[in-house]
Image 1 (cartoon, rainbow, N blue to C red):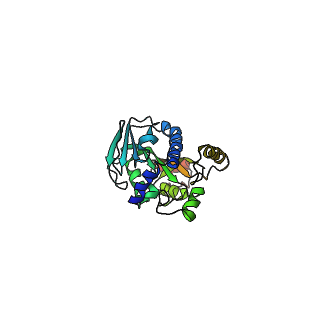
Image 2: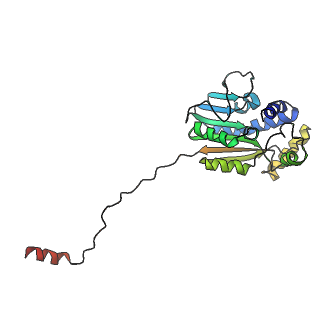
Image 3: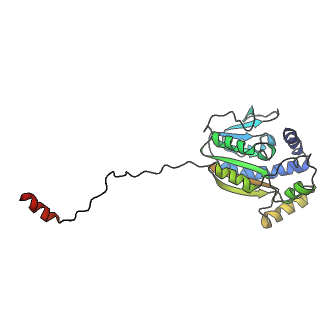
Length: 245
């Protein structure tokens, strides 16, 4: 997967990859401004920080698998995605752009995300949608040695199941980019995006999931009486008369 992931960064520099990245950045402009906190982490350096530009969080960190050059306001770390170098409950928002489908242990990555997120923190997952024209191309036509086709296109239902097992609550779900994977005419692509966003909302090339880390609420435990109540069979007045006698 490492070679495939390296090829993905090169693919995002192609005209088609750049247009997809622009579409993802536009959607992130609708999502990130509503996610608050002190620390934001992006795992993987896809977009070289462009996906995070709309965030209001001051401290933004990118965990890189390569060695690109970034400028402020980004902090840069180099580590593996399934062993994040952060303390538990320390990050407010984690962004995973095309990470899960290119890693060997995607569920372990989500476990690490759950560990480092604060209570009520958010994860934003961007992935290639297998239920799309791109997914069909990936499955039957494409040459699997080229990015992005060399990855595993994870079904959104499977990712949602993993999130549910980790006690995440889905907040938002979107798909985007309805142009075919083999056509690059910009005007036609814009028309296809407009048509697809209206009539094929679930079948975009990319899905975006936003989920919140839930906190278990404490249920108050009522006191349990040790003795069972005893029914009084005789009237209280007659019991008092016997006591005076």
